[in-house]
Amino acid sequence: MSEGAATYRVARGTRASRYGALVAIAGLAVLISLPFWGGRADMRTIVEIAYYLALAQLWNLLAGYAGLVSVGQQAFLGLGGYALFVFAMNAGVHPIAAIPLAGIAAALFAVPTAFIVFRLRGAYFAIGTWVVAEVYMLSFAQVSALGGGSGMSLPAAVVKGIAAGRMWRETAIYWTGIAIAVGAIALVYLLLRSRHGLALTAIRDSEEASSSLGVDNFRTKIWVYIVAAFGTGMVGALVFLTKLRISPEAGFNVVDWTANVIFIVVIGGIGTIEGPIVGVIVFFVLRELLADFGSWYLIVLGGIAVLMMLRAPQGVWGLIAERFDIRFFPVQRRLVFDPASFRFVADDREEDKRDR
Amino acid sequence: MTALIALEGVSKSFGSVRATDQFSMELEDGEALGVIGPNGAGKSTMFNIITGAVRPNAGRVLFAGRDITRAPAHERCRMGIGRSYQIPHPFANMTVFENLLVGAAFGGNRSEAACYEDCHEILGRTGLLEKANALAGALTLLERKRLEMARALATRPRVLLLDEIAGGLTEHECVALVETIKTIHRTGVSIVWIEHVVHALLSVVSRLIVINFGQKLAEGDPHQVMASAEVQEVYMGISAE
Ligand SMILES: Nc1ncnc2c1ncn2[C@@H]1O[C@H](COP(=O)(O)OP(=O)(O)O)[C@@H](O)[C@H]1O
Ligand SMILES: [Mg+2]
Image 1: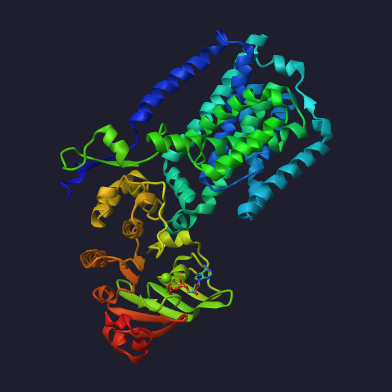
Image 2: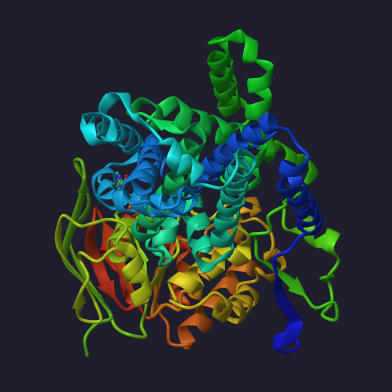
């Protein structure tokens, strides 16, 4: 059958991924230059979209790949937010530099938290993560040094320390937001393309089979949980750097930091990188459209999510990918056979069709 | 010589069902062992106990002399226990090639790139090369069963546990499967094969165990075991094959 060792190679890219990368780079260049020609309101909205995109990617990594349906990621978001205030106010760290430190702080808290919640399975895990997040909220409300139940504001001196002039401060935060969103996507993408990605996708598809093939499911999940906490903590720091004020209520808010994020991932399509990107667009468009309808907004959002889960559990991206057979993030490994060795051809379009 | 696998007085109950009852057996290194028994006799449960998918209520599991009763499934795989599931568990949204890579990289404890050559070769050997880039979820049942075996092979096992992989095959496919298993066995991999297609089983194994109600009903030379009165009784109809 084979004509020596060189009759095949392993390919990753798809035609869509190559064009997609070009479009993404162009789009990113436009976004990075926006502070020089765009409005301040636009920048603020884009930062919000950016951090929701990052949160959605991280939650998708947890739930969509590792099967960890956490309803308590707000624990790490709030921790990251508080860590930013502590580092910037009490330790004199530059607020932007404090963001990765806040991520590390959240990851450190994730270790003992994992010991508690990883004893629970399925629905109990979900409820357990929520309860732990509530415990964090109640605990932070007790700490008077952190403003207790009413929280605290970032002093003007600290805010001024970000950069000289309001324009540069807002630009710095804006670029940080873009960097965190791109970083979250890159993290998930590189993770999935690596050897760990094989384990994660295997766990997503069948935990029983992955363990019988040598994958340490538990260890993989613990690491994913800690990495997700790290990213969520960084996002938390960014969120409260834009808000300049934190309270237990705002930091550990289950609707803002978990319900919305679950909506985004479920609508967009769970278990893919494209899904959360599509979901975040849908989420912000709906929010714009329903802005005048007050609490109806949440009811409509919930209704759409339920309908989606029943009718199209693969999400909007899942429907698109099925219909048009495209993938922008080439995480799949394909065997491509040498054109010289009969039957298989190295044409892109053919490859893309075959692996469906 | 210590046995490669030994079960010592192993029992497992699911509620009131005694799936495995005071069961003991040994597999010599390099041996090919057949296992038969009626549906629900506890054959697959015995595999689950060996691989760690199920913890026994009593008894010990040994691998190459080492007590692995409490070892997790992934460690047992890395030690060299490969298995195929009776009901296939493919990674449905991964390609066939990637399914093999999982076993090769983690079960075989290798870097990903170090697995490519092996996986390519195993795909060829198991007749799945043409399906290499197909999603595993799109395979037919027969292809899924082949994938179960291919994936287990990719982990570089010392022993391969095969659970009913010949059912539903045409005569021609069955002959090809038997050849594949014989080749695997010749390369030094020990085999334990649970199979209802007795004639295929007998052309590979040198010893046979019959399980009934979670207990060992008979054991020994395959043809003598098949001819024994007890087995004839349990196997009315099937023995005609
Ligand atoms: N995970 C399980 N939970 C409950 N009952 C089980 C489980 N696995 C097997 N059983 C029961 O144990 C008995 C033996 O099953 P099994 O080992 O699959 O038999 P065989 O493979 O010989 O057909 C059956 O009665 C089956 O219903
Ligand atoms: Mg069975």
